[in-house]
Image 1 (tube, one colour):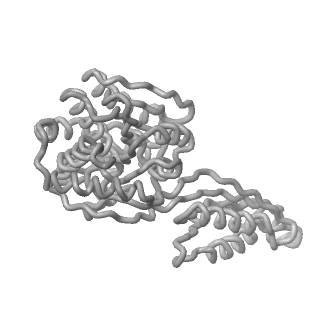
Image 2: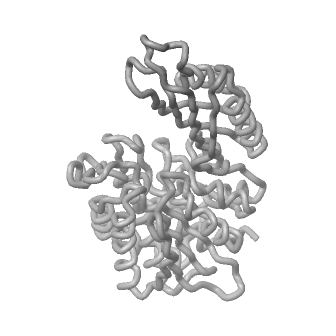
Image 3: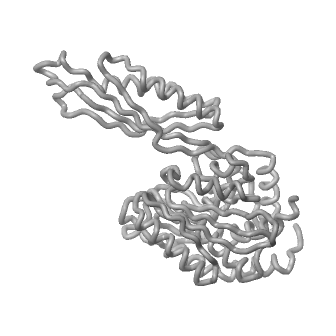
Length: 389
């Protein structure tokens, strides 16, 4: 354990003193409806963050996005000549419109509840207070950039190039997704490619002229069986057909069918092999007269560890110990924006936000007692980054 410098002691104490205000900001964010396709709501959550930061003199740049929530880039000045340190976080959630009205923010027995409370509005609140602490208490050893995006839950179709551009310039990237229920952070994640396949056949009365029909559903059923055989647990590649639709009526040979496909992989090479195989099965039809089309609807890059990210992890773990935390690293099958940062070469850690669990469900929770220590761990990591070399 290292003795804290005067600035370290000042910033960690400031964060501890502001826990009630951190919780108040989190409550406001959770109670702001911000499903991925609700641009108005995602932008409203952005306004909550902007108002907090700009009221404290922290400049925020809005990067307009027409189809989803705008991106927000907040900055705090740091020592000249150093590459910036990037925080990342997303404002969108997976929940339907009206969910915060049905399940507003609440705290019970040391846990906070509400839509998006852990994934990842607590990370947004933590990031905002870290920026405020450094701004108020003398700046940082490098410029701090916080990027708050609005479409991560749907694979960041509009935010990806913004994330990659910021990450290319960054010395280190910290994605403030929720810490694991174990308290660990994430050092590696799978990537994911999401596809939609449509199959076209020919309608016919299933009693009167059955032979004239060509069943799109039969063709899709054959494809689904072939796709599911692509799962390879040893390699770490999986495929799941999660949504199926089709048909016209129970007494009509189905002229149309479609499905949504989720694939997961560990490396980009595995991704290429999986997408090639899925596409081949889609386009090779075995029911005469059918045809199919397939497209990629969203994609995440894997977070693959590197020697630089390992050094950043070791550095973070040592700093966290001085904040009273014992932290390890975990691999996650879930995807996140951290993969985009890692793929462009930035040393990247994920899930450095406050600890929570059961994301994407009504039981999602946040460990309230983790808000301040996780903020302190990240603050110490930033203050000591020069020691890494």
